[in-house]
Image (cartoon, rainbow, N blue to C red; front, top):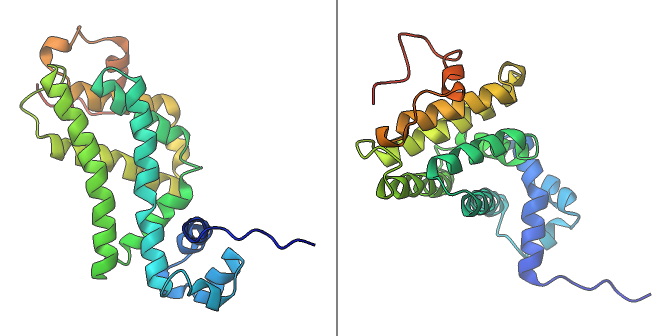
Length: 226
């Protein structure tokens, strides 16, 4: 019987990272052993060390691999949507729709946050979130240039708010509160976020979608005045 073809080293590294993701996402970094990782990957521990110097290097590589995948999805959505605010709305709804399939990456991020006292893990997390914030801020800046987004808003601050919505979705999912936020409410929440950022000249009155958002907020709270 012919021997199975060996994967190129870089392809094998990617395969190991994907297999390790669920292991790291399922328990704390401290509790994961190299034997657990090797078993999940389907190799011996010595073979694992041929690709990674140890558990921490593999954890960092797994963590850093999450951002490019998500950003690729966001960029694909952005290429199909003309209005920058509609781009962000579509990204938010898409994230909600596919939250279950993103759960491994989401749980991995939360596990990493619990280890953020480690400088290397904290830096890997920072790199991920900086790339997310940069994408959203640049989308908002493009909206400003086109007169769609209010010029008086801080793009990076509003980008963090956008990520905050995503983190809230993640937390609700993890804690079993998903039933409190169905898709229609998610759409309303996204519209509320977008309408607080839209330039007054781009508003065509308060439509049904925006009126429906009032169900989510106090009459004495949001939205702030433009």
